[in-house]
Length: 127
Image (cartoon, rainbow, N blue to C red; front, side, top):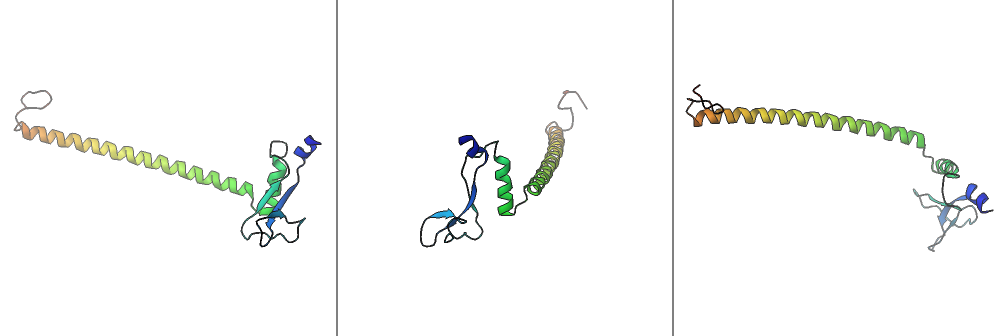
């Protein structure tokens, strides 16, 4: 019977019994009331690979959330984020190259000023 209970668990939605701290099965206890905007779901067994699909179906049915659509939207958002990160990385690399070029240009100009324009800073020869 333990294997049967694990493979075919009973799921229920819990509701609060007014003026108490109790949360009971709403189908069994008519006095239990659902909290607006919140679903409290109870499973009579541990969720594992043998009953995960049934649990997901119960959640989808009771919550109205379409998990396939949610997953598809998440994949879209992840792809968009990766694309944006790539774009930002390319822009940062381009800015870095520009800064290196400007820095080299500045250093060359500074070397010319220091040497009075008479010799090359790198080769120390007359220019």
